[in-house]
Image (cartoon, rainbow, N blue to C red; front, side):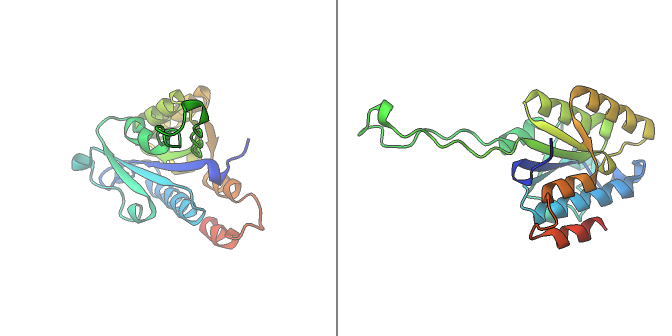
Amino acid sequence: MLLDAEESQLVLVDYQQRLMPAIHEGPAALANALRLAKAARLLEVPSWGTEQNPAGLGPLDPALPPLLDKVLAKMSFAAAQVLAPRLRPPARSAQGNARSLPRHLQKPAAPEATRNSIVLAGCEAHVCLLQTALELLDDEFEVWVVTDACSSRTERNRDAAFDRLAGAGCELVTTEMVVFEWLRSCEHPRFREALALVK
C-alpha cells in the first residue's frame, strides 16, 4: 500500500515556538515538517496545523503557517475533534427540485472525493501526536506517521510513541518516503522541484 497524493491530507501537530527548544532533535524534526509542508503545497495536498494552548506555548514556528491551509487552536491534547469537520467534509444532499420530481426520480448526490490518508507529524509524539493519531484511527482514517518529523522532550518517550502507534495500526514512514510516494514517478511534472526539497 502506497500513499497517493490525491487521497492524502497533511496534519502538522504543535511545532510551537516555546515548545520546540525543549524537544529532542527539535531542529531536525522541524526541518522535516517544513519539507512536508512545502511538498504538500507543491503537490496540492491539503495541509493543516494545530497549536496546543497557544496562549501558553506560543504560535507555530513562523515558517509553517504560510505553507498551511489553516492553523487550528486546541486545548485538548488530541486534535481530531477540531480537525474532523475539515478532514472529512459533510455529505451533500440529493440534487433536484423536490417539488417537481418524486423522490425516486431525484438525482442522487455525487459522492464527495475523500482524502482518507492522513499524513501526520508533530510534537510531542507521546502526547498530542499519539492521541490525535489514535482518534483518527477510531474515525476510520488511514494514519501515516512521519517518524523523522516527530519528536518528544525525550528520546524514550518518542520511541515508546512509535511502538504504540505501529501496534495500533499506523504506518510509520519518513519524509522522503512520503514525498516520493506522492510523486510516484520521475516523470511527474513537479519532480525536480520536489527533489530539491529532500536533497
